[in-house]
Length: 156
View 1 (tube, rainbow, N blue to C red):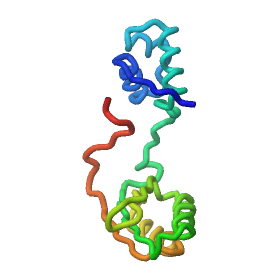
View 2 (view 1 turned 45 degrees about the horizontal axis):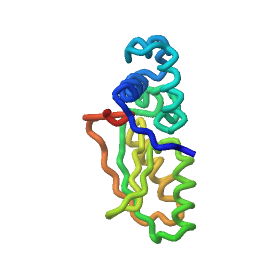
View 3 (view 1 turned 60 degrees about the horizontal axis):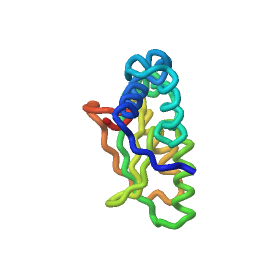
View 4 (view 1 turned 30 degrees about the vertical axis):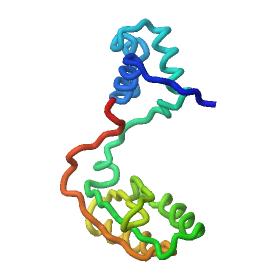
């Protein structure tokens, strides 16, 4: 059971430092936040246990691995039945081009961020994957011209 935890300035310092570099050594983290090693480790463990830190991962170079074109895709389903929704979510989770998928309110049921190497690759994703998912009724694509801001964690 997760207990309520109020973050103090040291907790926030820890989260800031680890969000910048998840491979930061414990000793260096302790130095950066002006604590000794034991209290630093105790605080990190508490932040992990309370769910503020969900895990650690490497930031991969998306452009080198998947391509440099980001496409935002609004998808509407023909009906919002449980089977249609779960079927769409299961199928879209299998598509390696999809970096994120959000169920949304408004004109579309889902908004996706798709990353591809070029227009041919997007056309292939569109015709071979997205349009073949049962229940997809409408698709609107918008191509990103440049990344203005990208954060992997909220500002604290």
